[in-house]
Length: 505
Ligand code: FPP
Ligand code: ZN
Image 1 (cartoon, rainbow, N blue to C red):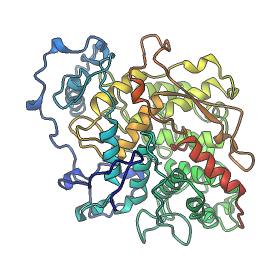
Image 2: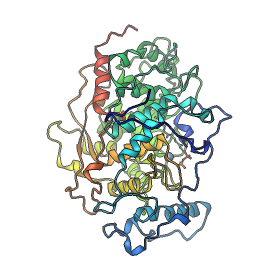
Image 3: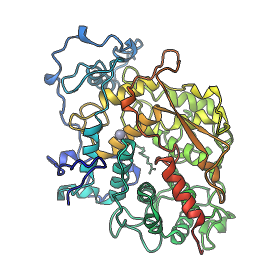
């Protein structure tokens, strides 16, 4: 049966040229990839220099500030592999940032920024849910993720996703695997639970076996306060964040199951020792690593901060567990000029997916600084900006949109659904002020303060000094919950349904 969009438009059949288009999603996101199916490099010359625009420098839109179209004023005189790659990346991005690359289609807006190619991205995401050729076998372990990325992307673009109600890969001993017959892992379980929340409805919620989920999560809790990503798997902040997302959305009790190993080490609850564990993940740079003693990375920073915000109010949990000035300094250094986008770690390159992993940290830190707000009248300080929303918006709209739909890491890379989902989520984050309030949608159970987040649109009339909002209203995306990364209503509906559903443990 042909897939149709909410607008009634028939979708085209999925087309894949070659295996070189397999998405370059981070393997460390938690995909149980078979060892013999490494993803090939996607750095294919989609936009070689010979294709560069015939437009001259004089035709560069006058509203583009020098910061986003010129080389940085201070340059490192030492040349290394890293500085060469950085320079190459800047040179690849500049024609896009200036709006003069021949691959860019359509008009620039009054700020010199290209429009969001909504229809192309919608078509791309519907395609990504269709059948894949055999050469895409490496994606077999990412089925729930593929569904989540497509559903989240389509939701951001205002498409109705309730038509997708399929049976996922739940294991009888609790949790979901990446594919049929695979071991339960917290990453595909997170993706499956969020996808079921997005499609919504009793039938979807009932599909989750909450009792075995609770017991399985109990087996992941570790004696140092953290969580493993799977039984016998590695322990890192992804495990902690995914576990807390699942426990809180499904309204599972904070008490550890009676057979949980961690009980033998004096722990009684899932949250025991967790904030101290997360605190130990802050590094000498000020950023947050996957586990104590390793390198700070933006994706882990988001997992740790969002996890702290599920544990309680950001001004209490973040401020108590993190050195906030150091964290601010490290996070600020993740945004580059002229590119405007974020890199994941020190001395690495900008990448569209960090628009969310790093971009999603900002509302959480901003809320830790501003404190809990009255739900009805949030304070004026909410309009503050800790990063350049303008720079991020320019990078996403100018450099990340693929010419046939879908969004990408950077110019020269192919779009994939992981980058489409997280660049759009980052763009959405930049379009709203998110704040924590004293009014929760949840009436009982643990972790109810996670359901107290609200948002206000950032408008072009706001005065942010030099940082302005540079998108047209027609490019406005749906706002997502800053901790659950699905619409607020979807998170609240799942939680409320679970609060009212019987759970015999
Ligand atoms: C490095 O990749 C990437 C990481 C160290 C972290 C990846 C983790 C996630 C994307 C988050 C997963 C979250 C959940 C909820 C499961 P790289 O070396 O290819 O990239 P880089 O050069 O940009 O650091
Ligand atoms: Zn990426």
